[in-house]
Image 1 (tube, rainbow, N blue to C red):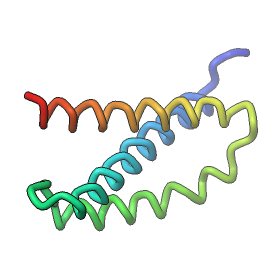
Image 2: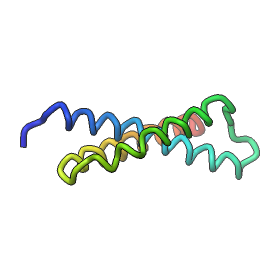
Image 3: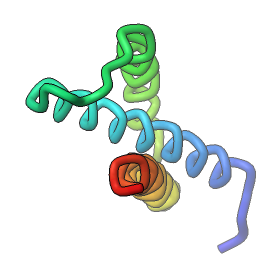
Amino acid sequence: MSLSRFYAWDFSVGLMSGSTLAYLLVVLLGLLLPSWPFNAFFTPLALLSLALQVPSWAWVDAERGAFLRRGLQLGGLLVVALWLGYFLC
């Protein structure tokens, strides 16, 4: 399997989508915790961004979907790690 520009594109779309999903989950947790920081500007932008990214997931075939899923996982883990570092340090 050679690495084509489509695989890199799918990985980067997954990376952006994963970080957006993780950010929105963090905001959802913030609704439950009173001292959680909430940004009223970036949350609607994140929802709009995710709404624009999700339809493109249907265009990805099974082989390219693996790169999308890896990007989703890595993007989500990066945001969660940043938030944990923020609260633990």
